[in-house]
Length: 198
Image (cartoon, rainbow, N blue to C red; front, side):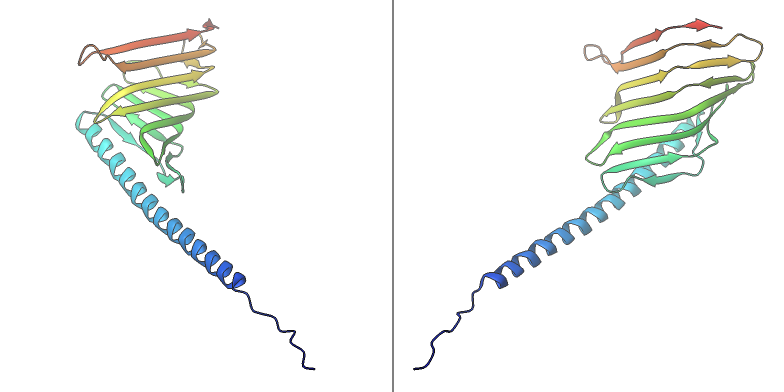
């Protein structure tokens, strides 16, 4: 009697393999498209930064971002400026050890910046001033082409100027926002905790 023990091939493994290949192809395509989008956004961010610098020069303000780099892939756009970054106006020059500005790629109108300590302010009319801190960061939210809200927070600031006693505090904050009730008006709030004159 002939044996009829024959196995019927199943289509399960081939279907599973096809699904895995399709899913893998979709993930690779999404990763490639996202990478292209990020590099386009990074190039746009750099052009925007250069435009801001050019506009500032026309108004007498010159920002020099030393060793400028664009980083943050894949979800952020980070502008990094190294030691020696300076802001020059008609009244003087302020130099910081570093500057980092970050915007999430899906919310580019909200920029968060962190400043490296110390900052040295050189003015023609006054002696050189040195400002140190443990943490200094700012938040800027734009509303279209205008600034909607701005906040600056400095933790443990210490100000030293030649020939004058040092002044330090636990916290210094400044907040600005457009007044929703009055066009062209700005609301200002400031805070200073633990002020101490050495």
